[in-house]
Image 1 (tube, rainbow, N blue to C red):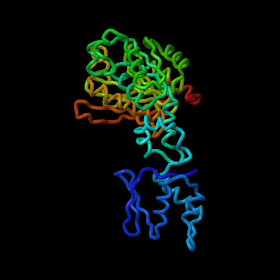
Image 2 (image 1 turned 135 degrees about the horizontal axis):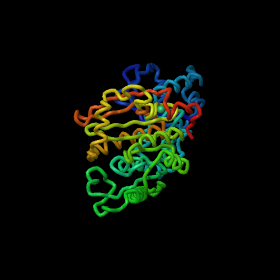
Image 3 (image 1 turned 180 degrees about the vertical axis):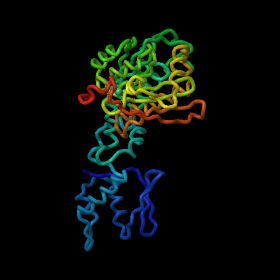
Length: 370
Ligand SMILES: [Zn+2]
């Protein structure tokens, strides 16, 4: 291990160092004799083992034993100020340029155990199945491509229509009448030829059909931006729970947006929330009769560009959590609502696993993420 200091700044006020990595926080360190500041300088230069640091910090009459260096390095790592230089250098220089902003974003979350480049490598090695290349799916695809997800499988059944242009920015006016999924795959290939992308023209018509697709494609994650055919959410849920593949869903009900995810075997699943399973109101605050009547009587997509891109960004962010684990999933068993009639105010509705859930309770002990 060769600990390296992240991009931090510090100032000295007499005997105290003020070390800042994030404007929200800082670390104050007592450093009367300047040893800590010297340690920070050596860590910033990097390339030194604990033994090297101990030797360079020690001087006649002032020994700094390795145990003291270990303790100091441990404290700096606990403050998220270090990563391990031995874990860096795995990405080719050209990829550093491509993923410069990703690596910069990851830096505050890295540690001696997990380097920034490892988080990027996880994205490069993963495969995401995106259901739907419309307002949600299309914008998620662009975000995943920017993040550098190594492989995508896209599925959609529709052709481009003029009404799509309010919220779907993958397509050109001349594309009207052409299949979205082919155009979306073309967009990804042109954006970054390093991304492997497969287009599947069609729709999910049962849980079994999706299970077969999951078995063939073996994605690490499913993103769902479809609400047709009716019941598709529960098919996606059943197939993903059975296969142990997490999924993220974004959608819109009239004046509200929602984002949720299901982490099979860990969080509640969509079936855990149905009245049959919970025996009550599964989503506090929603009038189920209103929801049922509306769903049966009215079917209109009201999504405009800001709605689609906002929800897609939150879905892509949740995907990033699953794919890198830079932090735990935020919406697993913890529904996020966004109120478009109240300044995009958000509220959360946690839902627990239901021990009687027909989808996830029976074989939960045997479920393993692949
Ligand atoms: Zn369940």
